[in-house]
Length: 99
Ligand SMILES: [Ca+2]
Ligand SMILES: [Ca+2]
Image (tube, rainbow, N blue to C red; front, top):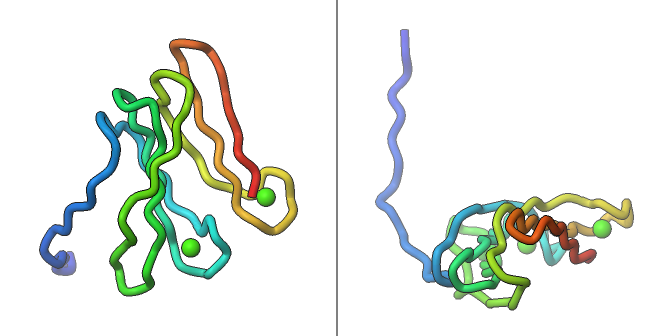
């Protein structure tokens, strides 16, 4: 027997132009999940800090190289703090920001 799934109403958050990918992780170490989007048309990343009640702060924007594509969050340098890496396939580059 299948369970019933329901969701709360949609909440929209403004981010940069042409968001393509979304990654979730704790970027500021407060144990609340934050979000990062790659904004392919806007050549930027948007970071939305988690408030802890299912909502997020207004987006902070960070410029990138042209056409950011995918983004991932993880502790890539093993220092216990989250880092982020993004790919730009048109330029065949990978950029990382360590926390
Ligand atoms: Ca956080
Ligand atoms: Ca790290």
